[in-house]
Image (cartoon, rainbow, N blue to C red; front, side):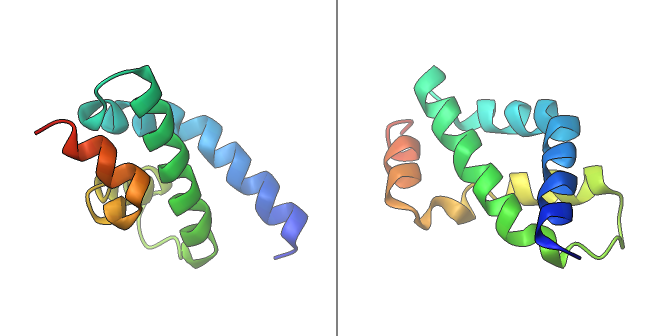
Length: 87
């Protein structure tokens, strides 16, 4: 798939899944800034994974599964700091 096509398909998917992404990020956020940071980190993680989406599950299931991995993407120092503030 061409890069422009991939980007367009990704942006369409993000728009369709925005609510699910925010809903799961909200669980981990302390405030609006945290929510925005987690959302951005999650979208980045989705972008990195998007070319490997094979269609074995629905797009919604695939997105939800990746979003659920927020604790795993917390190797990023920014995300780690946000989650540490919750304890």
